[in-house]
Length: 119
Image (cartoon, rainbow, N blue to C red):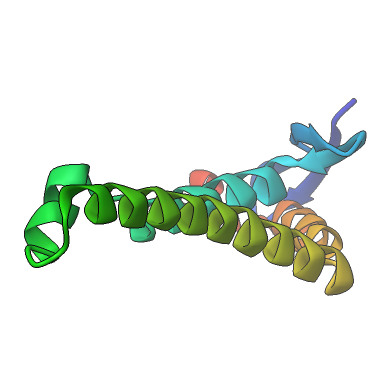
């Protein structure tokens, strides 16, 4: 159900937009968007390189050494992704990011700060 607040000749809505669930907890849309954006950013920054790129980077290594080094690199990148995402999740919980984003959303709705409602 939407609550309506009259402010400055505009009708503004206050509503909690729901996002996704993490660990059985419903996230607000903004918190869900933040987490998705963070994951995309991390994945784009920590990209893997091909076996050929590795061969070119380490031309003095044998083919077997290059392949093994590439496998280790992939394991490290995969582990790093997981660790960074887990740490981000932990920090979000510790700093109560979801609560802060929900509060900002509520204030925006109450004060008609939403650009969709501006003149």
